[in-house]
Image (cartoon, rainbow, N blue to C red; front, side):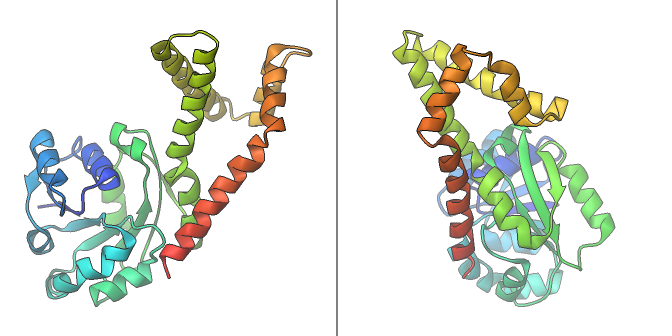
Length: 261
């Protein structure tokens, strides 16, 4: 098999789902049984970690950080013999730690995806060990093209990036739900309020990406003097919106650093 997934929860499943649009040469496993259902849905293979270590050329490690050492320990001999590419998405764990857990220096890619990867709208940062050749990296990036945007980043910045884009969908959902709740309080039906909020968030994000304008300038363009928008912005500022948004990213970053210790 070309690809294997050891662990297939929300994040691993999101990547497997997107990758399956490029290839069905995928074998998945996990401890909960979710992987079996996903394999049936996507038309890919299901096995166990030993089968994956013994047959897959590229192995995604999609287990929780505190489980990584326990996961790799029984696979050490197979990994040393076959020397597959390991692709870790465990928050807080550096490449050197993955190599230590595997018992030998292997080609390793460290990636930080987010759940919109499942629909091809992911924001994924990655870095690689010196053993990952340019050819292997280029081939992996081609296979991952249905996942979203992939951006190479220094490893020292991966935890900070994950605190924004990896954790960020949860912050967006929270804000989206709150906006919809406000509209419902004003009389808009719930389903319409959710759609309006989601499309507004999507459109605003696309404006930033497409126009390359600073979000402050785009905000100013909506805020007419003495208008309703600036009244809403004022309410957000009175409740410390920007400070809270900054603090949530900083808190997630600090937690990521704790996970690697």
